[in-house]
Image: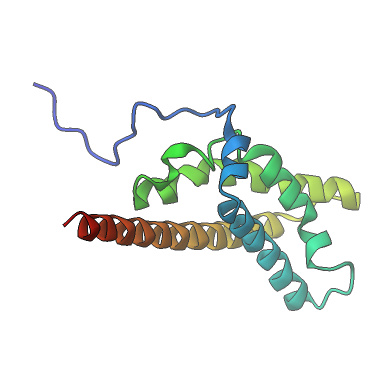
Length: 159
């Protein structure tokens, strides 16, 4: 007898590469639009905190948006099982976040001609993580409520 497994269960369909990721981006544009809004909000807060006059929030966010939308669909941020439960809705995008946000920091450094300092990388990771996760969990809750209401209406109509 082996001891019981602990920790979150990973479904058998879990994988690290999702070749059909962009199909899901296009089929439900609300989720990627919310992700983009979270990244632009991060850039807006940074601009306000530092009193930057260079560009606007979209241009400041551009390297992060480019890396997010170039990498995250391939890394599963928009896979079918994202809405299966709240835990999966929170955990699945973390791999994409852990790859795409550092790539956005690096891309920002390339565009500006100098790499951002370590504190910037840490703040970018923390702030985008909170904003993206907060959005994703809220989105899951809204989707869950809509689905629950739809099922209740169907069940009432069947009676």
